[in-house]
Length: 336
Image (cartoon, rainbow, N blue to C red; front, side, top):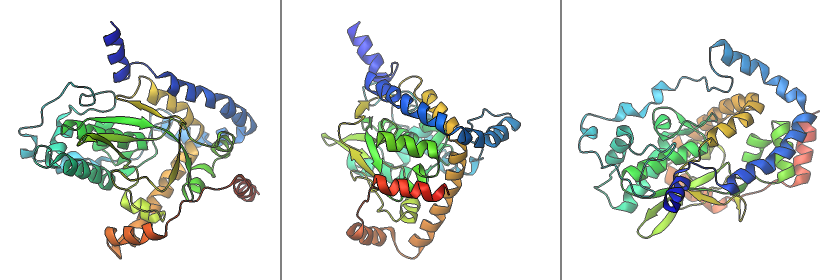
């Protein structure tokens, strides 16, 4: 019986107490700030209506992403002699990490599973997810649906990387942690919405809503965060991050929200929907802005190579965290 309970926890049938505690600790500040800014909720109404008019749930992502379906790059040969489905811990399918799906196994094979060394395959899988799938703010959809669409939120990008790694025989797990945004991410993600802005100011960090995938290669766990494509990183003036490197858009807060697990807990993505509903207008505007930044980054990278861009950027880039006084001054300016 204890073994079954432990396995149920590993697979995500229960929400770990640290994760639940982090959600609960946010409710008080968030409720207080929502009460201060009822107008922000009113601004969301046209965005709810637009979805209901199309017979979709109010939090749905409406953009048609069929042209980004990566099953189109798979051939009949890619589906032959697929990697076997494993049932060992960190290799088996879990919630939102469908490493047993034929499409995921086929892309793992195409990227070199069983042909390349583990570290070469891990790097190839990471690079493919980072370059081919884009950050899109929308409800969580899981690895397989990210593979069939433009992309997803950071946690979905991690799921796709973990699924490809597991399908190719490399153990993979999730790690969530606390973070604070560096500029310019703070100005994009936090500043535009008073509710997000003031909640972030009260808490000082984001907890249990971002993380990384950890791949077990050659006897050690290597972290990877493929959330930002090269174009998005370049458009934001950030270094491009590869497997084993720390992204420049955030600072990890040690000891805050640090949770490792094998499969996303039941109801996790549903707990995120109320937050999405509160900032739906901001989410829709953010997706437009992110696309514009990616186009800017694409133009930058067309004038050089990714390697040359990264070499120069890593020499000069220094992450900067906005001070509280800067945050308040910025908020006062945009609220005039």
